[in-house]
Length: 475
Image 1 (cartoon, rainbow, N blue to C red):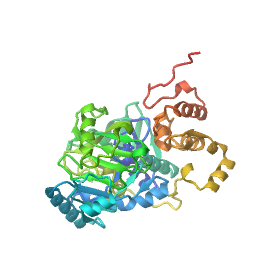
Image 2: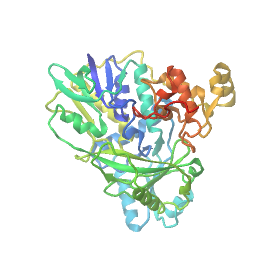
Image 3: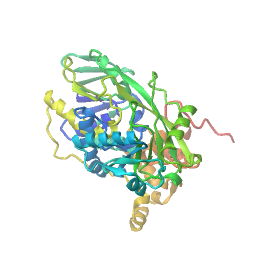
Image 4: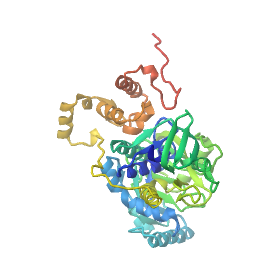
């Protein structure tokens, strides 16, 4: 019997999971995929928004501002890359400047710190590679960038360290309630829990409807991106947004925490919650739209295109509440942008809701807040030498594009839950994220995974079940 079962291991579910493991509770996360961070949390803009955009009085406004303020300390605790690089909402006309001033007023009203409107001269001093047609911008110094899947994985690893359970490949097909909740998964496992939190992302409406009356709908909204080589990473230093539209925040151009440049997303409402395909026309439109921001990007240096699906709620706002009729069932749903930015604050709010619903919360004396991950190339020379002396695996470079050592890969495997795929290792410590996209290091990473799990290299998959890379020897 679990005190709390969380459905969904994206950044929202992972944040709630880690928060609950601060208490003397038996907590589990049920995830339908074979790894955590497999939905929107691994395919987004990687932006921690300042919070000037959501309207006053919305949950988006409340949680975005608070969540943004929590990120720096959390990422230090969890050894996750984060940078408060600041963001700029760029105006291209007098009409846009009015929008910028409205955003500034809105953000100031809801508590965003340091917002100010700047003119063309100051803007081009801050970002000299922007086009000359800019008129000015909203400057938000608290905007940041983060490694979103690294953050989600770190939350889950830290939650497991503190006694929580991650149950992978557990698609929920039925939820019933008598005195407690009875959850059935697609493989026939029955799980009992006193409370249930629905953090199922794109499928939150489906999970809600298994036990509650239908009250919201989630529409998947596709967004496509370009990831550029690090040769393009210094074209801008801030996250650059155009003025927003009804469909979203527009085509951003932003550095990443790892030194790349990311461009996107577009916004296309979909029906299929699994359709992650990219479309040539969409990518062409993103490329063309980015030219209004800067003409300095060399798109021949693109190393990856991808699409992510955002969980767009019919309510127009986040849904964070205990169900009126099914007591003990809590929705944390509709987490479109700024869901990533809001996640730490949403987690605290869910714990408060569970407390009011009757969950007994007694804080642990022995909660371990720190989660360590070695980023070898960031260490001083003397620390590198000492580490190699202690563990020679850190002296063997596997991924030259990203400068990732064997020691980092083995560390990621040893911290993991379940059997990692090639992409699972990639999300944890970045081998294959560079210019060659795993073309050179992929086979070596595959060998290391096979060795550490004591399985054949042919058993290692790229990502999903059946996505085998090797089928046997040719010679």
